[in-house]
Image 1 (cartoon, rainbow, N blue to C red):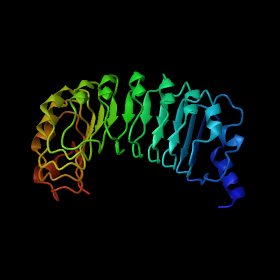
Image 2 (image 1 turned 60 degrees about the horizontal axis):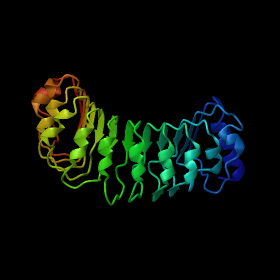
Image 3 (image 1 turned 120 degrees about the vertical axis):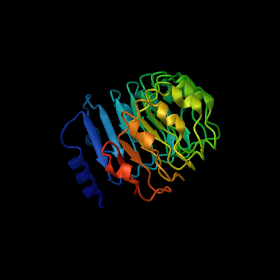
Length: 280
């Protein structure tokens, strides 16, 4: 796409509501971000998203938008989160998933209003320990990073409702997870788990649980201790049977169990209308 065409596409995508700007699938790897893309001098810009734009860094102009609340740079080629991130002191949601991050500057810990942080699917070996001071965090996704060590201070983030630690462990989960009793959404895929500890019964608020990519042979018994569970993912497991007891769970309405040992459902499951079961 020619430069003029890229600019015209940017104009098209940034027309409309000046409080948020969403830009998708535009190659911005060689283009300095024009001021109009970020709303000019509009102080009311609330949300900014660059999705699949081949960005290698967060555009410098972004750090001048000091009123920004939501920043989403999903699926780019960003390698570092620089010190200037601290300029965005009102930021409460930061999404950096599917980049090439190898470093996050500790200045991120100055974002005292941060509630949601998504750094999953990067190349991080460490994360700043000072993130333990971000006590307002309710959502933290850090799965699928080659972390050398998963910090135990995650268990101190007691307001967490959404946690993704996919692919960070091997065969066992750490005890600190059971301190997070407010969890509503837990994703522990690809951790080579064959069972869940009975201590998981503390998750009385859990609504969504993803166990995909683990070699479970049976549905873990502790799942029946989750009275508010609505969605259960069991893809890529070795489970060969769905227990009928799952039908008695009051709020469970969706089960995904693709690429497992189940190729068909028995009559009782075919006739029931409460739970949507996806096999493929």
